[in-house]
Length: 331
Image (tube, rainbow, N blue to C red):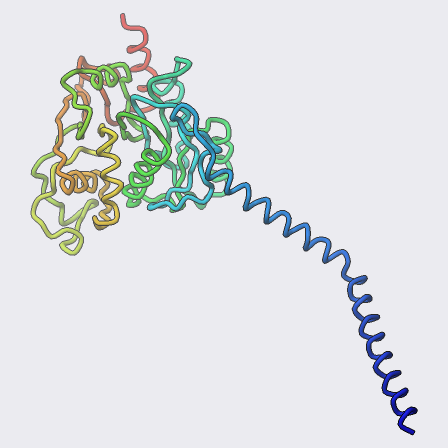
């Protein structure tokens, strides 16, 4: 009796184990493609991890940065999203604030004063551009950057009161991805006399450090009404610190670096040129006045450089061409 019961138990156990094995084999067969794909995905993830490790630890050659030497996961302090680096050292880096839709202005600049003739020029120009909700313009920007590779992009949307954010991201890009001695910040409606700017920077009277040069604005009072109205909550002092208007000013590399380090400790202020003055004041940097930064042109020299012109404000596209020809082919 006991023997028969033992045989029944053994048979039941055998059938149970066989059923489990059969079900498991069936599951593996039905899901063989899923498991294969899962294994391939794991392999891809491992490859990505290895690529990131190699990218991060890649060596740079001759001190200049290359695309492979920049990690794709750099954490920025500003709204900067561009990680394309400069490919050589520059005496002068020109960063140009431009609205997304201003393609014609950018192309005019590329054809005139920003045109680089030397194989390894002493200077280069990039354009600071934010996002746009216009899909046609947005697609055009992607093609433009692919063609010229001179756009520095931000993640915020273009707005008149976002110019400070544009300056911040331009400064961060410069100190993070470029080797340069001086930075010239301009707007896309100016003419730049590049030879004179380089001559000014090469002068023994121009300091290599702690330089903040432009059209010196001193003792300016905040407007409490109108387009540039500033409330007491935004700024409660009676005078702004000294600053240069945002159409053009020059900073030495150490100053740009110090400004970027100060972003986190200085509250945002929407007037970008005043904000730069605040950065300078906080870092003990004084303004060097230079009359070559021309806010207005003389009446008799509408599209003609003066004997001092470094940067001329409010220059249209037709005027850009005329001034450029005057510089290139003086009579």
